[in-house]
Length: 503
Ligand SMILES: [Zn+2]
Image (cartoon, rainbow, N blue to C red; front, top):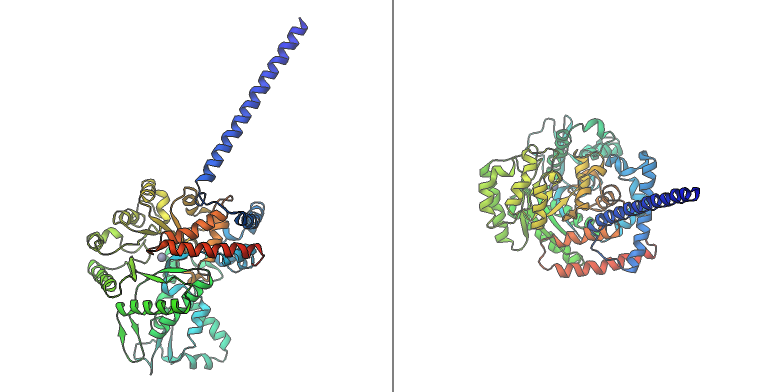
């Protein structure tokens, strides 16, 4: 009898054990299946890496994981969760940044023309001949002129050269002047306490700079040098947004928006002759949105005129400025529906934290107006129907992570909605918006921050390559095969150079 009992007990235990082990295995299998499903879904998962790419992948993954794993244990050490101003220089010293800097990144599809270069570069421009300055209370204005400008000035116009050398301390003078050409400060958390404050300081930057940049020779030099900076950052093509301000010269000539567009065309043609490995520029005419109907109508006429007079140069039309305060797209629907017969749209839409308000509802209007791409789309994550729609229509989202962080939409980039866009394999292109205003490289900082701070820990070289390819695929270039073929050649060269330890 005891034998029977022992057998029964032993038999039951075996049964229980095997049931537990089966369930455990099922749980593990199910977890593995779900995990694989998610990995296979993320942006870049369709890329197949060559053996050489796999080796480079191991290098970058090791570097990325080291940062993440240290960050998990010591969150205070995790650079990219801090304010961008705090870590923008530090990360440049990392090997991962150096590799990303060397990496071919395709195109920049979302950048504003007069905020690409650094404040040091702008400070250099203030050494130009015939530049006058007017120091007013807490601000400064500039104008190129043959003689003392007639424009009103709260104090007095003086040659900048004279002001600099009579200051007694050129270094200090330049350091103070440079502050006007950047929004980078030591204590952003204390000063930029809400989105309107940082936007107002950001907009002052453009107003202040306008006296320098809209002097025609400086305009052309700045753009040429901006293209150089892009090429140095391994960018091969640009779609530039511009308000096309009126330019001026020393003879008293004032040039209209068409002439400004023409000067961009001339500079980009010259640049491509000088650097034939650069694939050129297209223009997205992007005037300010805080205007009335008739002004938008006149903007549309300007765009049509540019398209007629400079065939093939205009990519399309957009409206810019802080969306929370500017007029929503729906305000101009009648004009834009009509304009859609002639022009392609590239609307800024959803650059906001609001939900169900006019700035995020701009995304609805952008989509129904047939926008080619969406600028920012930060609020898209809150609109599941629109997410389905952009997938269906294959509308790319031009995401600018650092811009969103600096301009107050997100404090810690780990919370940027791009994480979710990448996970869902949405059509994303990574861009930079106004890198000069916050002292970032044209695109390398945005790639680094996205790779380390926004994307999944398991996202690897496939994601980086896909983001670069997307920027070409979603460009308005007609002959995409040619540029993608050239990209592939440069990519192989990049892979080889990293394997040789060149970074
Ligand atoms: Zn923008």
